[in-house]
Length: 173
Image (cartoon, rainbow, N blue to C red; front, top):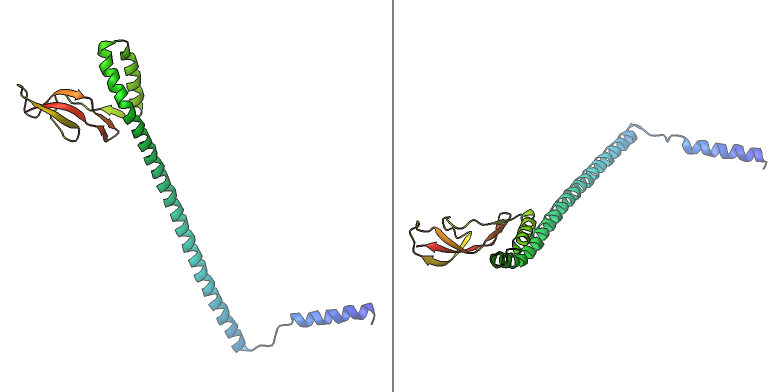
């Protein structure tokens, strides 16, 4: 066989591979039916994947939000813990400034720092007793209104909206 014959022979084979098969109308309808079925399956599969992706996306968003909330709670808790430990120092400075006036600026600096971190003092003297903010350590008789706080024994503080330490007070009977 020559090279030219081989080429001709292979061209003839390739033409046979690409010739459309002889099929009738029933065959075409069957193929169309199969293709429509395949299309429906693909659409269902696409919906399944899309729904799964959307759920995963929502889960990720919720996870990130929860992590942010956890971190915020951790930050608040660690801040609260530290401030609770500092409060006795603030009390000591308050008592000490009466004896040593030079302590007053130090106490003021510490108070400013704590206020930056959302610490607020609870108002007590002259206020009506409120068990949410005050702890009665003694009942006294005076010419003031019943239930009015006559003296603050220990300053109370709030961190944001949370009572960190209730004010210890004397209350009029």
